[in-house]
Length: 402
Image: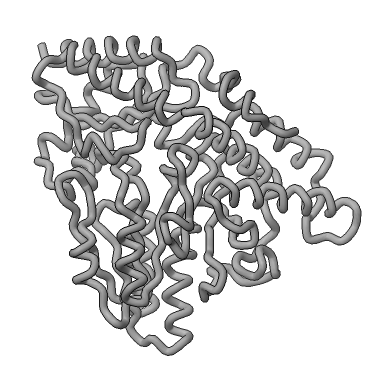
């Protein structure tokens, strides 16, 4: 099955899971698998079940399917197919990039490798850095961000040392949508001889992502953030990068990640990448940006003086709206608004809520952090969804404020 630009741009089939349920405004958490993706995967769960490493007939079709999927994902990020390594999740890809570079540096004689990241990173990156510190003797520097959530390239330059082996800064934040100046940060990093990794889980397929223009050495792409299934991801590894694999065993993925590949997941991921390329060419970022801004404006009109944007108006992902509503906590709004499925970013510990670490790192007050809502749109969001959601959320705010 081959998805065409016409299919992707003009006739997206609604997934069964979205029929009859709440309006889904949590696309940054996960996306429903596109029906075309599911259709493409099915033969590799039934007819073409063979191990892609097998030399006999049962292995040849899965092997060819892996090659096709790898090429499609590479095309989405303008990379060479040979530089795309399939992974089981974005967390694994981040850990492989960070811990793999540190382990390789230790092997080459660097006794105290230095890593730089920043305070609003995804927990997968922060956890991998912490692991490298505890188990590989790495030193970690965590850069602050400004009130818009942006890293200052000058602060990165000041933090770089001769023993710095890697800088890891996410392309776009999963909560606020803020887009970091990755090309500039990578240039500063390379000028000092270190390598650069970016987690592009949220940006890939939503805005153009080009590993050459970004100038990165490693880049994470995640299937379930772009209408493929969960349990499949990829790590772009620039040719020539010395990377120690996390999992040893067979020679799969050119020795960079052992274990029999998830062929069905990879096939779905490849189709999702092809659909995303078609949507980008058809102007999907502009469509989502218009719907996002409409949602923001309708909420402001229904809740005058109470809605405040968290993060910059730009650069920001087109589908992401993070707002605080004064005088009420976000989890109370969503708990009383069954018509909308969305997130807050707050964490619940023993019945008490704590504000999002991302918003706290940006300098927002505890009160504003707790009053935040993350509303994220996607392929099946309509203008009617936006208007209905704005009315329902505003009604929930007013009912809880009386």
